[in-house]
Length: 328
Image (cartoon, rainbow, N blue to C red):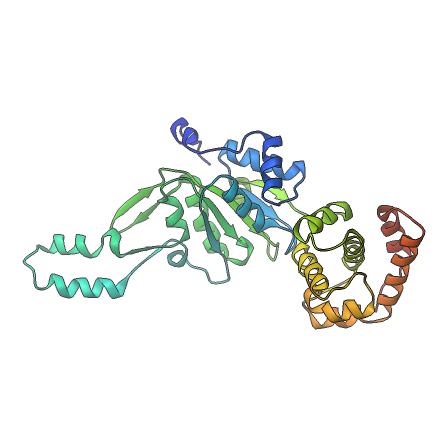
């Protein structure tokens, strides 16, 4: 990627040093480790896109949202999918309004050049996320979400935009960014991204949180959950993630499940509580069937024993994972 001019560097606000970024994330309710704060700091300081990979539901997209709020700027989101093309991501012409203008122009004595300039003007241009980010009145946070779902052809097109922050519209000309966006790309690794894209980005891997971190997240996001219930939830989730599931529950599912249990006035985990709320935890029929099997009773019994014995959850979960028989 080409280095940006010092003028552009000066125009973009920052979030301060790494410790200040940790504080800003915490104020926005995002529990982050130093690795995440360092990646955000370097992405802003070096004007580099930040590529974040990890399983679905671990908080990748939320990083971009928190950045936009902390920077007091707009979030522009490009949701990627198979078949995404340049026009959908960059711009389109408003053909209906153009046709109306053409009919009006027929009644005038304007030259052909004047008519074309009127028809292909900014008022008829529909700015899609990439062009909206390039032309924004101040540096926005551009979130390119689930880039791994887009085709390789679109990924190749994206390289040019990320390198030069300009694009050409045949009817108008070249448009260059006056305020270079903060860029966050996310990927669930459904396909391997190209080396060319990776070279242009800083890289961050976000894994499932450990027990302590997830406890802190639940207590922050679902304060109505008692500490005892939050401990049981996070311990049970830690065991569930060791299973061979179609869709491993992410932090989003942990929070949904915690809220569901609170709304049903559940104070502790048991089979009835889990079966009543399993739709918030597992989003696949086979996963629900597996959790409802004999493994559930064994897992709950092991967690109850650890709690009664006063064993620390970190060591208890490690021991239970080794001894608990996996379901079939």
